[in-house]
Image (tube, rainbow, N blue to C red; front, side, top):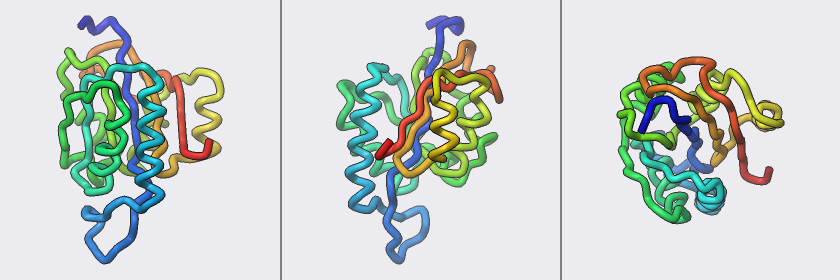
Length: 172
């Protein structure tokens, strides 16, 4: 693929987690989270985007979210469980994305707030329609996702280069 072709990044926050007596990294999804993860997966499948790669935090709640969401996809993308996504800052997430091979055109990042919302805000130099207004109004609740696009290599991904094309959150 040419670096002149548009690339898609979906920033996907894990679904609603439970609060049992376990470490934060080991927190599972709540019942509501399991339903919302599948619903988010259907919404992502409805975009028609063929994802090449999913980068998923190693936390239990992100892995469970991804497992339920991807079942709704017509084709499962390659999945990499990346420890650096857990407890990352937006800048650290950009560094992870900068390492992506340029043959990947469409990528999902399944992670945590505040980094996922922060990265969506930082990358989106422009927005289509009311996507930015909806994201600002709703914040980034569990199972929400932002769909962004940009043109260039993954190494060139930096603040302000992307367009926020869509935003979705449960019960929106």
